[in-house]
Image: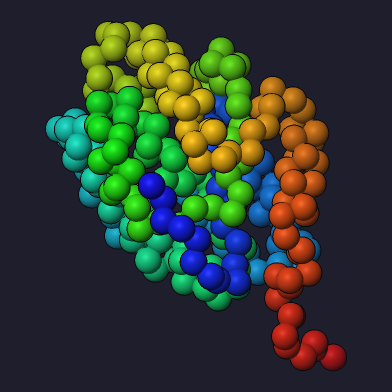
Amino acid sequence: MVSKRPKYPGKLIAVEGLDGSGKSTQIYLVKRWLELSGARVFFTEWNSSSLVKPSTSKGKMSRLLTPTTFSLIHATDFADRYERQIFPLLQAGYIVLADRYIFTAFARDVVRGVDFDWVERLYSFAVQPDVTLYFRAPLEVALGRILDGRPELKYHEAGMDLGLSPDPYESFRIFQGRILEQYEMLAPRYHFTTLDATRDIHEQQAEVRRILRQKFRLSDFKKTKGRRAAA
């Protein structure tokens, strides 16, 4: 299980959902909203550690990663960002926005055949987000958004390493369908806040902001809080 929430002044907001669910667009809009409001905010995204990403890219290019190795290398990436960025900034009173959090690993690693309990223990050091926004989109809607105008799918993105289909687009459809099943099981277990990702972008963003305003006071995270305002 994810570790219990220790006491710290910051807030952790994570977004999860299928590729094409619009989660990245929504968290970016939240980021801009908070920045323009003068809040202390930090943004992080999955598989983006400057120390680990080159090794991840090299491993994917070689196509030699086993499901367990795949899981471990992403966990290493996350642990690096968590130790150096996420948790220190939560302790410093920031709002940390995570474009995908540990639940991405729970869904994708399990689909690749890794034991769920093992993956859950692997990430047991990570705190539970204050809010996890799950953007639920029907499979065909999400696939349509991703495939529209995209000339080629990446090997691992399409789940080609699983041997689901020789056709990358069919493999991608099967892979994403299985990930969706995992998210639906994770949602109640980890108390996701579920949003309808088929709605208009602005309608979704209005609901996201309403939810976040209910969870915390934006004024508590102003950059000038506790400091003497500049003349």
